[in-house]
Length: 139
Image (tube, rainbow, N blue to C red):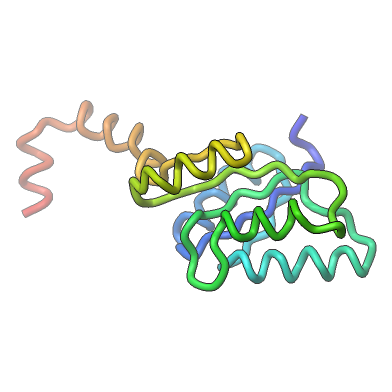
């Protein structure tokens, strides 16, 4: 099902970009990374000119320096250049309730909190390691 599917990721945090790429490629997706929504949009415009297919999914951070995820979404979905809607998954590293509500109400796409990305791993570490070992390691 994932074979051949193209995913573009825009996030100004290279750790999250690389982690997502690693996980997605291990699951058979083709992944392209961008440090900002502006660069992703620029790539889409180049793809359109070169008649290269657009991505099947865009995963992007809501808050980025030049062009954030909501602005990128608006630019793509209100443009006549992209008649087919490209689905979005938004990422956020803050608990900005207003941004989350706005994004989910405006387009009914998924919003994923980055702080929850590694939460299962952290919980497992705390369960596996005794509390005294964790405290000694931190000191």
